[in-house]
Amino acid sequence: MPYPAQTNRSTIVSTARVLIERAGVEQLSLAEVAAALGIKAPSLYRYVASRGALLQAVVLLTFQDLFAAYDAALAAAPDGPRGRLLAIFRAHRAFARANPRAYILAFTQAESETEDYQRILEQLAIPIQRLMAELVGEDAALTALRGGLAMIHGFVMLELNKQFRRGGDLDSAFEAAIAAYLSGWE
Image (cartoon, rainbow, N blue to C red; front, side):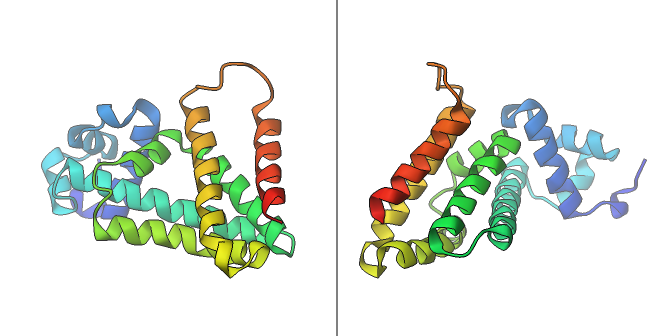
């Protein structure tokens, strides 16, 4: 059994996210995180002040990992704004599908009005807005960005919540939707 000194905030937050993916955010407790780490729950307070603070840390980790997915997608993307936007949109969906409960938590958490949260969302949007500006021009970039993010996030949320019930291939539907969206702006 590891001693509290052998754990750290990063391990605690990562463990919490794994537990959230396994059983849902409603089931997460500090006692469960401590048990998964093999330590006593009071030891966690050295690293996180409360369950709420732990959830905020999970949200931050989730966004950091989403940004990393964007970076990896951009590194492998073809040249040109359309190919790079397609890569980001696909990476966004793939990340959400791989981390559905953490993704939903990150985009629906109650602390969304804080400055930190707003800064994080801006970090998410700026690289996409730059690519949109290359594709549609600076004047229309913000509108195109908002529409693109709404479409991607809306599709993902409907998919994760199993609200696409009429059959069909969702991969093809996603590809057609993002291609049509970008073509409409070109």
